[in-house]
Length: 487
Image (cartoon, rainbow, N blue to C red; front, side, top):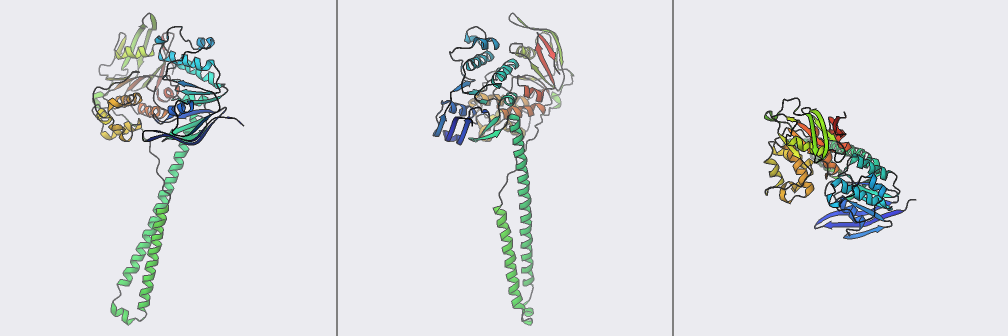
């Protein structure tokens, strides 16, 4: 039997008046490979910090029986020894850390955590800034790792390759599912089907009982009417009528009691809720925004440089109208530079004169004036308020979130709002640079739905393999300073 590395007992962790985590009991065993999923703000990172001892629970106990190392995406690399072989594998530059890119910082921290063996690893969003090569290294390094792995990641491909259990964090509770991320999705679909079946059964049984009760009450009314229609003379002429009337009254009460009993059975039925309907969100464009150019973005023998480095040499392409085009490639190959060149309508680029481009770039968003989330969206969109609310809800702006002041939004909330605004805005071409970074899996799936329901042309850069496979009509890759069509 595998030894227990970690155990939660009657954990309760609150922030202000809100219970963030409520865990009666949960255990991590010696060779567990656990993926943690949940919406932004659900408590995934908090759970890792609780395991790591950075946060203390208000109630209960966290028992640790193993040495855990912790990878946090937001902190700088610690000053520790690194295996030089790993430094080479990860192509970490021998330069001052202040000049490192986001991807290079991530590689440095991964090299540090893999340089020393630990019985357990706590890893929070390790692939955010990694290209395909870095992600492959990460998966290879952990495939044969001999210890307990607990991983928070929005990359479903990575989760499918590395984990054998899923912890779903929702409303402060942690639910465990067996299998990888795809298995978890199938189990959630099964739960939804079962919920739908239970709801249909409940509605059917309630309807049957209500009809039966109504039938009984109608019968009681008929008995009442029949006894009321007999005159006093008829009653005197028939000496046995008094007893018949009493019998009818008794029969009427009996039928009414039966009807009441059925109504009580309706009240005692275990109520089942209908599962939430997930509808494809369509973004229809007005006639004034529709493009008729078959190729709204083109390049003829485009050459790109960054400082002294050649990124593209004489590349030509035609991006078709109404399609989603994904651009892939290694860190530093020139993907973001190409997007910027297109946005600036740089030399060698031809863009349809009627193109109205909306762009999402990897940066901190700051809002200019105080207004609510809903007002911000309504002033920048021609869609009805019901559609605006639906899109915001899909991106996890629920309840009173739409009343928040945009200036008070967290970084993750700001990103989600900007993405909503782009799809609801007055654009016919969208340019998106790594839009899935810092989104949880559920918001990524909502974004996929947005992309698939969008009528305009989309150009995006991403390292998320699952995301690209689900949304892209064409995939290009920058290889050897050339833009190559892969499919």
